[in-house]
Image (cartoon, rainbow, N blue to C red; front, side, top):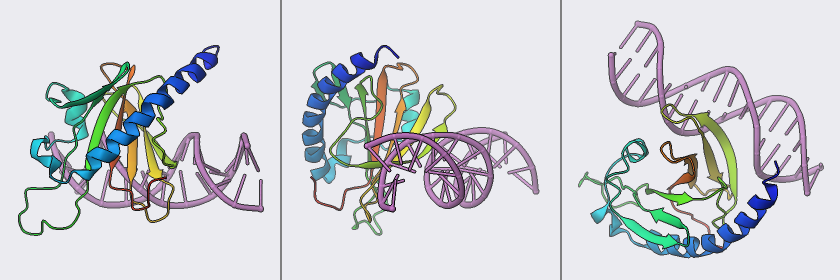
Length: 158
DNA sequence: CGCGTTTGACCGGCGC
DNA sequence: GCGCCGGTCAAACGCG
């Protein structure tokens, strides 16, 4: 409880690096053919073996950002619509929730097996926006936070 | 008073 | 066919 002050200070720091993070994320979201170098895998595997996360996007101060992501490709039949994009990155942060400029409403919390820490489910507060986000801690390194975004914001960025 | 969080229940998919 | 596991819903509560 006494580390509240520490948290506040850290949050300030995180906020700064989050700003950069947000910008970078927007940039990444622009790429549609990003799935070229993506590993079509699910988050579970990502957590299980972080060996194949070969793509390190950037480093933000003391926080490292890893990019995984996956697109529903493979079907050449109806491949035209914007598919569900899922990407996750691992950051070293004391706070679970990194403010990325959007407003999120928590809609669930679940204890996943293989991980002593609960997983948090968030949804974009904007109506019609289908973006979801799950946050959970790395089972190997509890000091790391794995955030997974799913979907694209339909509303203009702030 | 409005809204976000909380928490347990519910449900659907998958594996055995 | 059943049970596990992950994901979502929804009522109630707490807070600003």
